[in-house]
Image (cartoon, helix red, strand yellow):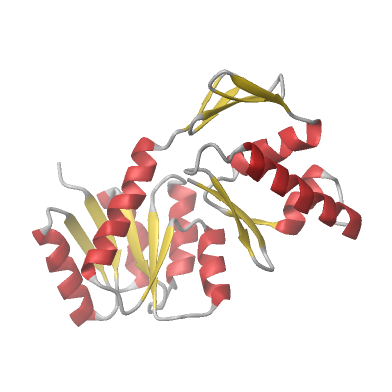
Length: 227
């Protein structure tokens, strides 16, 4: 069965090219050009992935993504935009975007990114079974506060354990630094902020045996836990 894509683009000439090219690669593409119609189409068509232009008439791609996330929190979303500001990229990830492509882009790049986002969703090594979180090659025992890989186990402190759990629960999203501080320490004081830097460095070290797991620093904003 073909992968169904909901593609939202108001530049009709570009949209036609992208749609036809994707269809030649075996994708099924439902295209919308007006943001006002997107949510209804999403509910009717039930696509496997959404590709949303950010600048749209009536509703922005970011607004649409927020509405779509209320309906389906798991659907992969790729944003397309001519904007280059870092703030826009960060906002896209905060809203729940899985990827962000700047215009102009090549069709090969778009196809590779579509395939990558779908692969991550299908093959994600992140899972919970009982009180055990599986993250790639690692297993994290919530109750025991133990992080294991193979036959090696590491006992974590309470705050290390809470940090790993929170990163996992908010995986693939941009986590605001202040939000993380308030959750783990109860306030965002300068002292605790420096502690967070130390803890993030420690957790990165603990997870270094699996390069598919990465804690990315979003400068001036916070962190993103990705595969």
